[in-house]
Image 1 (cartoon, rainbow over the protein chains, first blue to last red):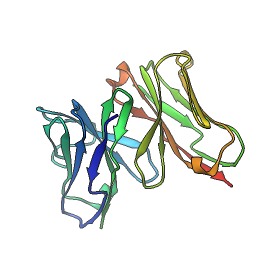
Image 2 (cartoon, each protein chain N blue to C red):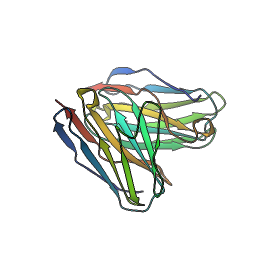
Image 3 (cartoon, rainbow over the protein chains, first blue to last red):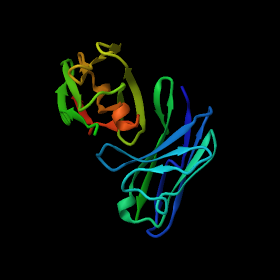
Length: 112
Length: 112
């Protein structure tokens, strides 16, 4: 099963600023998924990132707010732009393996 | 549209007792997943169920799948405090373009 290293694990950010979250996978994967989990809630898919093409965003999420990079088959970044307190959440990356979906350790973002 | 309903959403129980968490989904699916999440942590894969009648067990947890009833259960036997966590089921299939559709989660508290 794949191992994902996600950074940072947590951050406290000022409103109006941006934060970039990184995920590094120890094997090559075609698709990487970015989720948001608000406190006490389930997971919501933000976008799916394929290497070599633009990410596919779910309803309610736009590229200007959540730009994603996928420069190779083992790495992806998600940027949360122009942050507001409503963006305070846990952000998780995920990949699909033969054993199911593996998740990064998560980034706990607090916007003040 | 593929929807997933999980119940109960909250469960408080005594150590040593047995209980079951239910996961209903609305249309056909290919795979059903169970995950565990500890507070402030990422998601840990517990089980992947692929076919009707599938049953998997790990320690005090047993998961089963009835595709005809569109129902999966996660049974906890002789609960211990260490099993306190939030448990999520998720489903993927053609109706969701093979994206994971998540249940709301069951917060399980096991009292010593």
